[in-house]
Amino acid sequence: MRALRNGWKIILSVLIGIAILATVLHFVGWQRTFAEMRSLGALGILSVLANVLLSMTFWVLAWWVILRSYGIRLPLRNIIGARLAGYAVSYLTPTLYFGGEPVRAMLVVGKSDAPTTRIFATIVVERFLGGLSMIVFVLMGSFYALSSPQIPPSERRLLASAIGFVTFWILVGLVNFAGNFKWISRIIRWLRKPLARWKCPLWRAADKVSETEDEVYYAFTRHWKGTLAAFILQTIATFFVYTRPQFFFFFSAGLQLTFPQLSLIFAFTIMLSFFLWITPGGLGTAEAALVGIFALIIPSVTSAGVVAYSLIFKFAESVLVVLGMIYLTKRGVQYMKTRAEKKAPSASGS
Image (cartoon, rainbow, N blue to C red; front, side, top):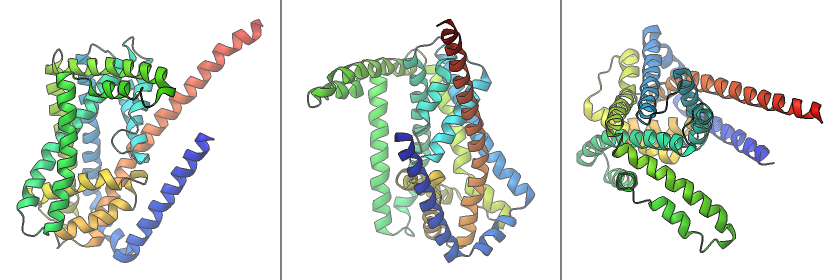
């Protein structure tokens, strides 16, 4: 029943996304949008695919470095497959940044002798470093936004509040993990009092979370060199995401975007993605938001061009999503086959 309810939720979110996208295309003109996409040309399409592929490559390398620094040796194909599967699940669910991480962990737990908590710790560290790298670029964008006269005061206050909120929790996480204060496991243990009915499960969960917090702490102490290298790789991956508008509009319209423009677009896009990723791939909601963002920052860019920019990168990202889902399905089939083979001898013996 849970799977059925989740299936209906996904179908409903897809329909909502399609409806929003159809509305956006109606107002900006679907013919003009497809004309903008065609203007990208073969070289432009290849550059978009290269941008998305390079981003994923550096994300994979960052996680690989973290795993190696923890002494976890996994075949690179398993790391790539698990990372793509996690990316696909996150992309298709309303939780952009963490939805697929448990799936990624489950796909590699059986491939190593390392404890499950250590595997989870490498993923937490990798995602945390990704958040730090985004904050670096977002803060650059916020600097220009808060000092730019072309951004209305209301939008500046909204951006400042959103950036402050996200930065605050990133810093809280940094202090917690780097200092090993174990605030998360302490909160779970505290919940045993108001939620006495789940006292035992909460106690076990707190123990596991505490072990994971210890492992994350080691990333900043015992494995700091690997953590630093992974952060550099994460920053490079974020840079490719940061420069996506330049990749598209250079080939489609010959535009050279300035550093402040790229910073502002990135900052607004990241902030809005936290709140508008309510459909698979941000379908519809992202296009509507980007039209408003570009109207503020680069008014000369047409709305059709903005929608084309968003859709062309979605098509490129969908390639990685399909590969991730294929890997996930393949591993699921292998798991079911293994279970069936284990049951077969016991059934024949009885």
